[in-house]
Amino acid sequence: MSTVLVVGADKGIAHSISRQLHDRGEDVIAACLFDGADLAAAGITVEPGVDVTSQESVEALAARLSEKGVKLDAVFHVAGVMWLDEVGSLDYDLIREQIEINTLGPLRTIEAVRPLLNEGAKVGIVTSRVGSLGDNTSGGMYSYRISKAAANMVGLNLHHDLSKDGVSVLLLHPGMVATDLTKDFPGEHSYITPEQAAAGLIKNIDNLTPETSGRFQHSDGTFLQW
Ligand SMILES: NC(=O)c1ccc[n+]([C@@H]2O[C@H](COP(=O)([O-])OP(=O)(O)OC[C@H]3O[C@@H](n4cnc5c(N)ncnc54)[C@H](OP(=O)(O)O)[C@@H]3O)[C@@H](O)[C@H]2O)c1
Image (cartoon, rainbow, N blue to C red; front, side, top):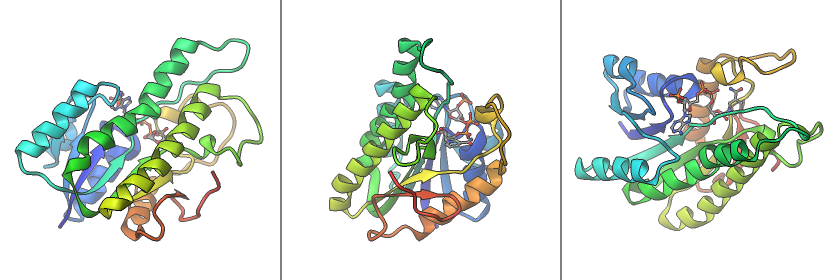
């Protein structure tokens, strides 16, 4: 059995990852922005009130885990938001806020829990193919694209630094997933469920090795361009 921290587990993809890992017998710690009551009721250890935009909050999480003697074999950083915008009406405060959550959130969190990572641990950071420079053929979605492209750089940089400790890092795209995040997304899309996305992302991390560390992978297993 391994110990896995899942960040942003209140709902959506991270909620499903927490449930599936728990169901297969992993020791899951679900870090939730709110109380994670339903996960706790299912027997999952919940760390409530973890806001990835708050240095104090993530450092307190790391301190609580450290006091309990927790060592981590894997981390899924999933917390994120998608606020839609377009050039001509950009709100720079909202862009900064989205970068705070989507880009600095994973950096802040992984930096805080780094001392708790076992040698050979695996870190998965959920970004988005929308943050791929090579895949951007349509424009739009300024703040989300900027924040996720930069999150990919966060993960690649962490790969270079954490690999010195024997830790592997993978950037993850879950696919188009029917969650609250996409419920107002315009256009017709073929969505997968959060359960399907979670199963793929767990498989990605199961299969992650030092040789495949520092890459960007779809939940369907395909490696993606930056
Ligand atoms: N759904 C898709 O098609 C899709 C595609 C590509 C990438 N992604 C990425 O996948 C990740 C999960 O998205 P989802 O679809 O599962 O969305 P979701 O259902 O809205 O879940 C997002 C989670 O992030 C949490 N969160 C937001 N701000 C946070 C903060 N400051 N600190 C801690 N947690 C915070 C939310 O907590 P609350 O509910 O309590 O606010 C929620 O649990 C995101 O990073 C998203 O960008 C999703």
